[in-house]
Image 1 (cartoon, rainbow, N blue to C red):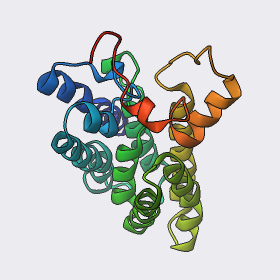
Image 2: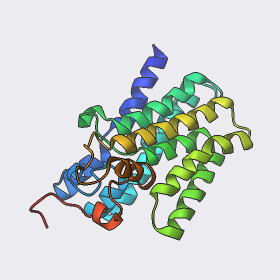
Image 3: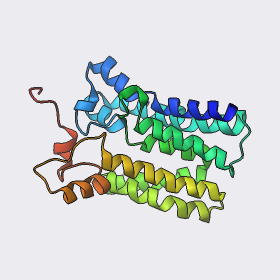
Length: 224
């Protein structure tokens, strides 16, 4: 029963619709209808404010991602090598991506996943951040670099000597984020673009179209 309670808590922490609430309370908008439609930091950055995007990112890393894992480690006494523990971060990310509070819509899980890495393995957290942020600084495009950094996580886990279960979790984290990119909040594929092209863009670029500016600055029809 205790483990079940921990799992439910992890999902609910992840599912807490922080970005949605910020959009509603600060700007009076539903950010699911703006930009990428993603309920996360990038959409808050472009359609609410930069300051709120920074606050949101910190909250999602520490509260939604890291805190459930810390509960598992220090309140429930689970070992880092335990299969029971790695279910916790997976549920936190799944909760964020498919929130029960938003009709199973949500964000991409990157910030929450980053928080889980911080709690599980600081060296993996550092490697993920270094590659992701370094790539973004060079290209000003994060989608492909996040994917690349996620793909390398299982390798880094082996190299730094983390337990095998953490390597398995890294594979699961990659799968959760790739799945969410492809499903994109259940959005249908655009009819005016080849399906293969859209799926490639979703997977690699984390958007439907080639033009990033066009994608992130989209607004509902009739709003300027």
